[in-house]
Length: 408
Ligand SMILES: [Zn+2]
Ligand SMILES: [Zn+2]
Image 1 (cartoon, rainbow, N blue to C red):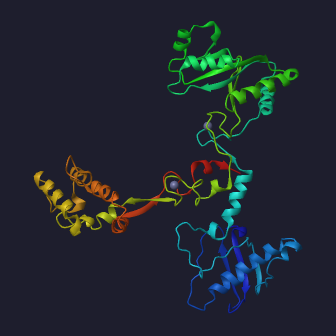
Image 2 (tube, rainbow, N blue to C red; image 1 turned 45 degrees about the vertical axis):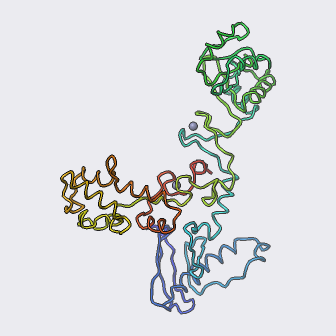
Image 3 (cartoon, helix red, strand yellow; image 1 turned 90 degrees about the horizontal axis):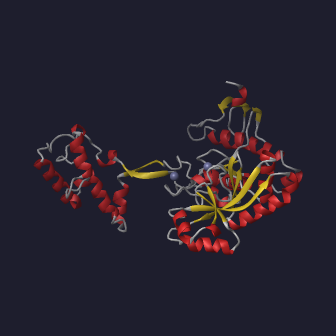
């Protein structure tokens, strides 16, 4: 092990410590145990944390140090490779499932600010950094990458469901836009009859309006920027540049993935808080895990049979009806009601859990009770058969995908 990977303590004598020397590996959980009065706190708080804190404060300016408590250095010969330390004492027991080391020490608040200020969203699907474009940026890109090429500048128009294409086109013409690009074809709508337009736009979800055809050259930059400004304004912050012979480029004024067009919110501090609806993973509500009905809790003793009370919730007097109808169904099908749960066949197990037709299974039982959650005793009972599993949507990180997509 390289020595930087561990904290080396030599000759610690703080409080009642008897000149002890030890090494503690970094990046791992280390637990200090011992009987009362053996010096656990003297080592953890009064030596390691005290020295880490002392060195941190020493690194601050004299002015900043005026506002901080003066700390005494611990009585120790040498402390090597110590990192900035935080200490959480046990005197303030944390009871909510939402508290973490990050929230208790307020480091999470600082990280949220950091991510909001300098983070950039990246598209999870394309793995490219999302960005926002302004007309000047677009002109820059086009001139740099496609200088001297001929190009068409367009803006997209969404066709809403149920919208009359004729009135949409009339509106565009009234605003001075007469050339459209529909299904890879550029058409002059003033040269078309109403029925031709209707058939052209049939089932069309998006069409594009042709704004300008031009050669991309530095001398004409002002005209290009002008056109792009109009495109962004008319196209709801979106525009398309079709470079003749080199394909299409889409640009968006909103933070968006420039390859698939998915838009992202401008990062705000609340987006990085799992205690805030804006940031919390919608699947687990920011807890990082989801409660699911646990077979191990529902059938805790798998050597028991259905008749012998294998299904624990069905042994309660209130669930008598469920137990009886299942026993009856087993008998009718010639299944052995005295067979241990762990010996049940796939078919028997499926019947037991899923039911069949009017027969209600274990899943139906819990679904029925879910509908009665407003009763406290039902909620208490349901909680006894559920256990947490790591949330699949956020992989236990507790944040929504948009927040996880932001990188620093
Ligand atoms: Zn994308
Ligand atoms: Zn989640």
